[in-house]
Image (tube, rainbow, N blue to C red):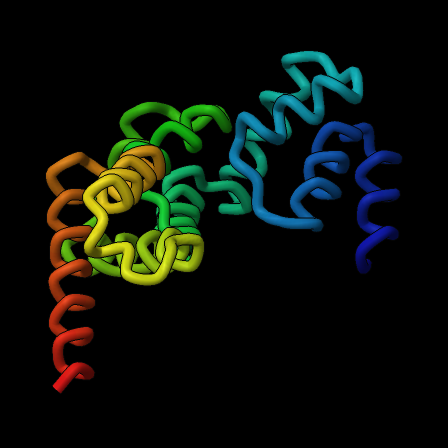
Length: 174
């Protein structure tokens, strides 16, 4: 029994909350809290929502830990988000604090990649020769802190990039 037929079957069998949860999951992965919120909006009772989520968990259709790790990976690499921002966004989406904090803990390699992505985004908007301007370097550090990086990491990353830009600039002068 495929797609819509299976959902219709579930509804006919008296499990409309589970059917609605499957429809939500058919579009993309969701955290448990997101599914619960959507089912509440549809008017399902708490017991039916809990039962649907239990069933989804048993079938490994929802797994906040796995999804949080994937979320952190994508947001750090593609968006240049730091650990604090990732954790805050996961908690905003209803993920338990311990899961959010664990997923947001970036190893050294992922932290470097996230910082590089964030710096590329900041540097696009920076004026030519930004590395010579202390206020522009400070703005880049502030931008990284706002993206969820620790101040020490942000300062080190901007200093390193500024030094490399200065070295490259001197090399082209010769």
